[in-house]
Amino acid sequence: MSHNLFSQIFSRVADLDAPFMRTAEGRVIPYREAFALSARYANVLRNKGVVIGDRVAAQVEKSPEAIILYLACLRVGAAFLPLNTAYTTAEVEYFIGDASPPIFVCDPGKQEELAPLSTRHGVASLLTLGTKGDGTLPELAAGAEDNYPTAAVEASDLAAMLYTSGTTGRSKGAMLTHSNLSSNARTLVDYWQFSKDDVLLHALPIFHTHGLFVATNVILFAGASMIFLPKFDVETIRKELPSTTTLMGVPTFYTRLVKENWLNRENTNHMRLFISGSAPLLAETHRQWTSRTGHHILERYGMTETNMITSNPYDGERVPGAVGFPLPGVNVRITHLESGEVIAANQVGMIEVKGPNVFRGYWRMSDKTRAEFREDGYFITGDLGVVDDRGYVSIVGRNKDLVITGGYNVYPKEIETEIDGLDGVNESAVIGLPHADFGEAVTAIVVLEPGGSLTETAVLKALDGRLAKYKLPKRVLFDAALPRNTMGKVLKADLRKKYEALYK
Image: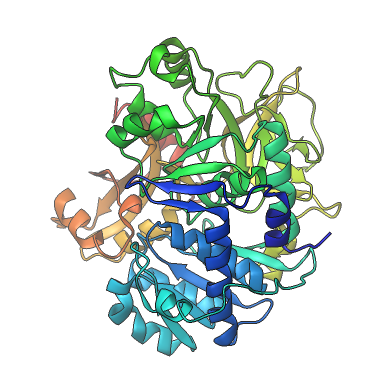
């Protein structure tokens, strides 16, 4: 068997003329067409000098062609590096400088803005790809061959690289192999009982694990199809839902949909499965959804570094507030926060995971990689959890100060650094507070210098354009001082407790 993820996908698609994607505008892309176009893109990349192990960065809007670019990267043996479309130019510069990709594909409208940083960091080719299949990449592909000899790679070769930040604010490139992605896709297809008859309603972004590796890879490995939406929109979901069998979403999808009058048993009785991930789903939302539709949302748990780790069962009780059992072939244990020893059921500790889904390490950060793994190969997730007597895993918090808002990871240190640099600011602390729609709302508490006169509006205006929109605080509050322990560490738990009712 070939280790290349694309070869494994190709071998599992029984009918090349079956639809792979349909857009909201009615465009249908069969598997045969998608694979042929991926060969053309692969030929372009190869002609540009891309070889096995190279990174191909892409900051492009969601489109069928963006998925096909991902397939093309697999075919040439390159590591696909998707970048959040909300990242500012300053943020993108860090990723390009760190990853050193010979190819960078961007939106046609951003080419002029991104060209200087591409030159500074030695990008050999800056190509463009638009949502209508326009841009220099498609133009070059039009004259390329529609067949390509998929690269023979090792199971441990990189298939993708996704950046995930840490509490220091410095982003880390998680290196994901062909084996990591293929093993997880195969497991999820079986565990969630996907087949060629499934139609997924895909409204997720494709620059992170959920939308790209979970949703898309599962469909590819099942030979199924998906209705490919540019973004989540309630009215479009209502219109397209009757044509689908499954929906994958973040909790925000469900909190918004459950407010709609049309959401009932009659309009959802044809659905096979609703899946939620990327952030904790409130137990109350789970119960509301079941009351309205008769369906029990299947919640699962994963990370950028590990793909999916656990899942509530397809057949069996889906417990609100729990993320289910470890997936087949994946080992999960809970350890004491200080000693690292494995602890008994019903005790809160650090979640550690080991399996074929766990990443190879952090790009150019060998010390950080070693620090995050135990000697016996278990990865330390940074999540706090508990396993009950039945084996259900529940996430109870983060060991780090990560804020998960609308399914996106936000690291406070990055925002605090920006705020602390503003004139008149003495210091700041950024926390996540409970929010019915976003799960958590990014919230900044600011201490001004004596005589400082900054307002909430002024702080938000100063941050706009320096940070991606989802990282911007929902509120900026002002306090006389930040609570600290005897070692001088800011007590963020005290701040979360003090302001916990802010959005209620």
